[in-house]
Amino acid sequence: MCRQLAYLGPPVALRELLVTPPSGLYRQSWAPRLQQHGTVNVDGFGVGWYAEGDPVPARYRRPGPVWADEGFADLTRVVRSGAVLAAVRSATEGCAAGEQAAAPFAAGRWLFAHNGVLPGWPEQLGGLAALLPPAELLSLTARTDSALLWALVLHRLRGGAELGEALADTVREVVKHSEGRLNLLLTDGSSLAATAWGDDLHHRSDPGAVLVASEPGDDRPGWQRVPDRSLLLATADGGVTVLPLDRTH
Ligand code: GLN
Image: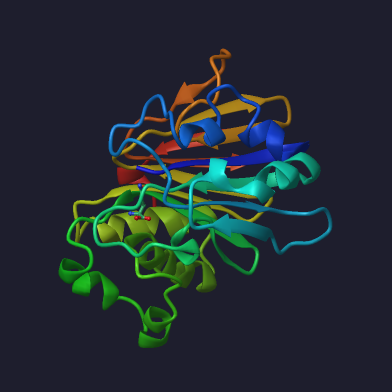
């Protein structure tokens, strides 16, 4: 499955987050250490970040492997941010290719990514699709399971849900329809939420900063594994709360 990462904290060069760590997201695109499903993550990549004083994030996404992209090295060297969400993609069966299918997905001030799969995509997911108003279904950003999940999360966010609530409610709804793997990651630039549901999730807190990632980018002490079926909530001051997903509401 894909690998993904989110960071909140003091502004750092994107390179320090993504490329410099010896087993960071960049290297995870061809040599992930913990990936249980799939082998490499070469079906696109993306990074979204917030600039100081602007609530709407910027994104850079491409359809191929991150190491083959000439712009990535320059971009990650000069762009600094205190709120970042990035992903490298391994497409699952039946999902569309292309830049539009690469996370992060975005709307307004939110960035979202999904690591996992909805088995039976798309034929067996009519019940799930029917939960969305037709106009939102027609607005799917890509013909993928992740884009459908993003539409379900966004529907809740637009209805006023908090980040964690939007993810937890979506997971609980989706599992009624599909035995999916649902590691979701969402930020608004000042806090973030993530679910562990079927795949790896780790986090670390350093003074005033938090990193949440599919797998640790290095072997420093301080990384913690998030138990499966959990909801993680984090803020830029490094505070992290992990709740059992079955019992949160
Ligand atoms: N199923 C999603 C996609 O194809 C996510 C893939 C993954 O986690 N490997 O984009």
